[in-house]
Length: 412
Image (cartoon, rainbow, N blue to C red; front, top):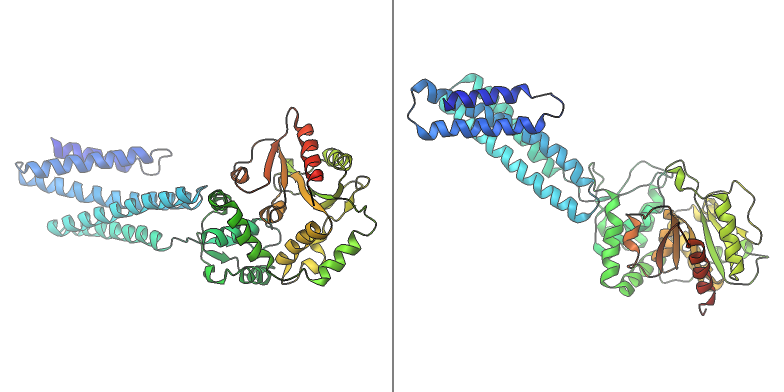
């Protein structure tokens, strides 16, 4: 009776293949078939045809389990690489490893039983199981622990700041996206930052870059001053600001009042357009900055409205040839640092945009505005010194004004 139940469970499991949403039932039925067939063999008191049937069912079920495990390992490996944290990624891969071991064990059982029965049909099934187990093992060998430094100008430029920061602070591996416009600039920045030893050859299936802000936050939470010093040394170097940046900045700010200044960031992107800068809010931010005694400097994407009164329009500064050369990333950070040291820059404010992240890591006080808490960058709040997020809601405008006044009152 048990052998027939095992065969029935296996047949039912095979009927689930390709049925949407039936993957778990398929697995459960395979486990039942294996358990019942094994129980028949362990009892060992049935007629020869019953024992042979149980062995055939057990071999076929193990082969099916190896193939299913290969599928499961493939699915889990993808979700592991996309996990939001480094720890979740590593935990996912440990689970993949256990699944792969199960695939290999089942393939081995299928092969052993096929040889015992000397059944050509079962031999063919066993070979398919062995191929599935090898494919599953290859998934582990193909695991890519590197994070990708994107070099397509259409990709988020700011993401490079916290990828490099994670490498400086936690030693993560980096691979550079090949065959894109800014490969040379990425290589120059990473080598200048002392990260050449962290570079690995480009391979598919990298870790998800969304893990990086938390990695950076962990280092800052452990020792914020040391983390910031390490990043400043790596990203800015120890030399003076290049004269060409000094000269360009002086020309760009000519005519601006000699008061303390604040960066107002503008975002205009087709990606998540609801996060873009609202022209009415930008005008209000500029007015509140001026009321606090600060000169608003507009940076980021292009304006689609006239610049607010008393502001300095430096939008699209990053498209200037000065900031598009081989040293473009360091040059942009040196520009912000020069504004801070020589032109009274005291903070930056705007909608959530990755362009703010580089200056924030260098120590520039930062306040970003959002409609809902930002899960990824929220990890920096309370970790990166001076980094804050502000959800729009009751009283948020007064909070902005208070922050601007505090920045303006801070001793130079």
